[in-house]
Amino acid sequence: TGRFRDTREFPVEVGVSLLPALDVRGTCVCITVTDITARKAGEGALADQYALHQALINTIPYPVFYKGPDSRYLGFNEAYANTFAVDTAKLIGKHLTEVMPGQAAQTVIDAINAAATRGHDYGRTVCLALGNGTEHWFELSATLKQTRGGEARVLVLSRDITERREAERAILAAREAALVAESNRHFRALFEAAPVALAYCQGERIEAINQCFIELFGY
Image 1 (cartoon, rainbow, N blue to C red):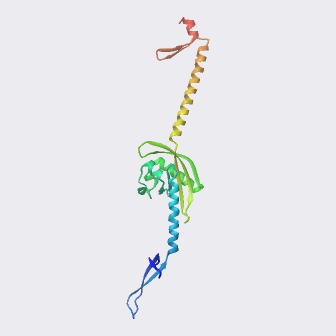
Image 2: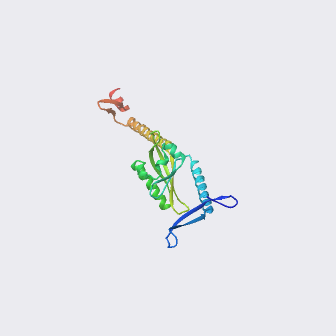
Image 3: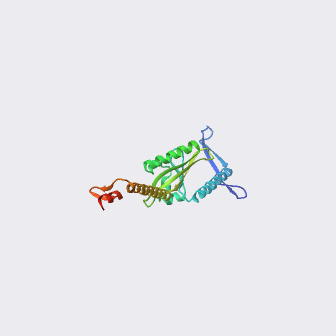
């Protein structure tokens, strides 16, 4: 830190260089002092911008993480840390394959690569274990962002779609059950209307007979 005559302080950068020895004097050094107020102000503005960026990401209720093109973790939001109960500081710099199971890691890597190429990628799904051990399904949305320095970053949002998938499975099961019921009703109508005696058996047990069977055998 430097100080003006009026006692105001300002940030400085000090450089020290060794000068060659001369006959008239011994070894000397050259000391340079540079006022870096403008640079510090720029760094402060950049830090403020990063803090705002992180604060905005933390408002997103879904897990969010961002990576470089090499699929290594660069940062997270609070929802990610809370959902998966992880120490995010320990994940920084790790590759996806070191954290996620094989198929899930590959799906996320594919999403990152697609976003790096096209600018975005949506709709891929992965199954991941939460902090409590239960498995949930997530739908990924990946978007390519560029830093001021031109470095590529891929922001990945993971939306929990477990309830939606369960509802879809329930609807599909109900639809299949309805189709089976309708098929059974249709079969029963044909069974009853057949002009010949029919019996439906399972093993040696008679489960059903039609009207012609009753009329023919008397029961």
